Amino acid sequence: MAQKCSYCLKSLIALLNRAFWRFRRNLEYVYFYLPPIPVIAAGGNWSITLTAAQAQALPEGDNTLTADVDDAAGNSATQATRTVDHDTTLPATPTVDALLSNSTTPTITGTTGTGAALAAGETMEVTVNGATYTVTPDASGNWSVDTGSDTPSSGTLGTFSDGNTYQVVATVTDDAGNTSTDTSTDELTIDTTPPTISVNAISVDDKINAIEDNSDITITGTSSGADGQTATTVLNGVTYNPV
Image (cartoon, rainbow, N blue to C red; front, side, top):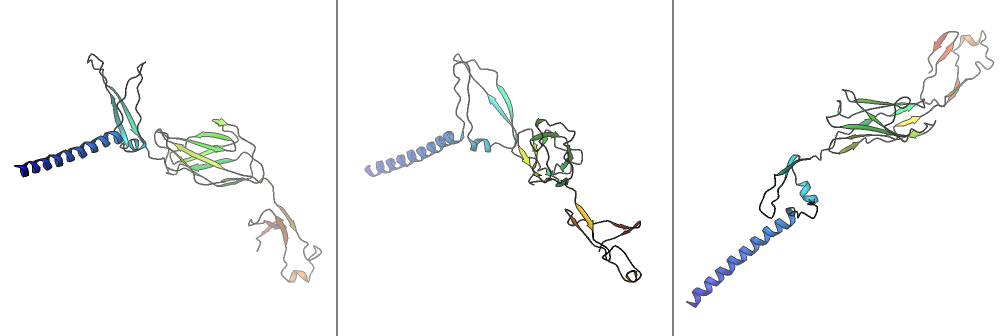
C-alpha cells in the first residue's frame, strides 16, 4: 500500500509540475507579447502602449483595431473600430542630375528613380541653397526646378556664387511618412568666369613670306580655364581644326 501511495504522490507531483510550467509559459506570453488591458481614467481617457516588437509583428497593410467596454451595470458600448495601415516600405530613391552651369539662376533636374510619376500618396521636395521646392514629376518621372522663376515652398534661396558647389537634396515621402533621399552629393557647380585665349606670333613676325609658305605653318596659342575644350580657329574666313 505504501509503495502504491508513493507512486501516486510522484505522479501527482509530476502533473503539478507540468501544469506549473504550462501556466508560467502562458503568463510570460501575456506579459511579454499581449498589450495590457487599458483602464479608463477619470475624464474617460484610456491608452495602451505597443512595444516595438509588437508593432513590428503587425502584418504589412491594413490592420483592424477594435475597442469594447462595459459599464458597472453590464451595459456594453457600441464597439469602436479603426483601420491601422502598417506600412514600412520606403519609396523609390529619387535622383539629381549633376550640373555645371554658368548661370546664377540654374535649372536643376532629376528623376523619381522609377521612370514613372510618383506613386499615389507620394510627394517630392527638392532643397538647394536654403530653399525647398515642392515638385511634381511628369509621367516619365522627370522633374525640374527653375531657381530663377519657381517659388520655394519654404526657406529662402541664397545667391549662387561663381566657383562654388552646392548640395541638392531630393526627397520623396509617402502617405505613411516613409522617406527616401537621393544618394548623390555636390551636384551643382557654378562657373561664371569666362576662359581666356591668345594667339602667338605666326612665323615670328606675323608675316608669311615666299619661303615660309612652301612649308607647313604651325599656329599656336594659349588658353586658361578651358581645359579639355576645343578651340575654334578661323583664318581669312576658313575654319581650321586644332591638332
